[in-house]
Image (cartoon, rainbow, N blue to C red):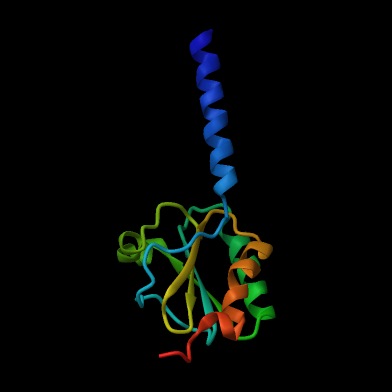
Length: 138
């Protein structure tokens, strides 16, 4: 009986930890120019999805709505099966993974799981502020 309770407790803790991280954007480990598509003049939300992903269509609709409502922002969805090289290069471990690429081609943020519109708008906010970009300094 104790091993069953321990297993259930462990599974619950793992599930809660995953849910807590779901959709949260984090800073990239490096911000060098990437090989990802840059479609938006300010930012491109690059979604890497697997064919069997249950939440990917909902995330795609959400990101498309955010991009359509935000000048200079675009949404691009790439199939993991069609771009296996991206999985290794960008450390994609879950589907969907969303990479925020600025207008210069640098990854500015990343998230895995069910991204909400509020989370997407929050990560885009610094890119929409011209002073935060510091593009003209050189």
